[in-house]
Length: 253
Image (tube, rainbow, N blue to C red):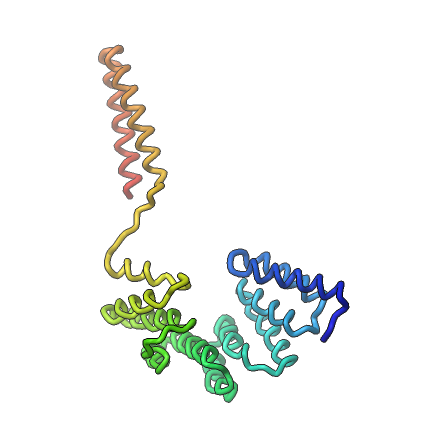
């Protein structure tokens, strides 16, 4: 459907804002998507953008409605996996699993089929079928040494399922493989590996350092005062020292 130029420009500006904000500020992206939707609800790209904005803000019922509308307009099956994931979000994993077995899946490209496999595995886990989830993820795409846009996420999902099943050594191996493929940092595989290896990260800018430095300064001042004040000064310095020790313990906890 074509729009008058002025209207088309307004819609395009709002869609650009949706794309720019959806990862970092999904609520704002959602607001822009609603504006675009009011301006051009009969445009498939607008319905799709509105669906993804609603999905990003966990408004799964609304997202599913928008995706269905976009699919009716285009006839494309591209949105099938995210529609199935909306069913999961709505607490209907059995519907997501049923969608994974529909003919539409065979019409998806390779990336779409991998995405559908991820959704199906997630649905299995939702239903408490952990072993089945692991089997669902086992595929030629998982075994391949080639690096595709979906590789890191597929390996990560497999590692996470293995860990949930108590297969820690295998999980570590696959988290490492996920990290190797994760060139853009789309997963937290490095953090998961560190957890398995017992590595703890310390904040280099921990405020507790400032507190301890301030307390040390007060102790120094207290010691100088105690030298001039006699016994009473010694007592005050002892109280400050006791207070500082308690604060330091609290910081460590």
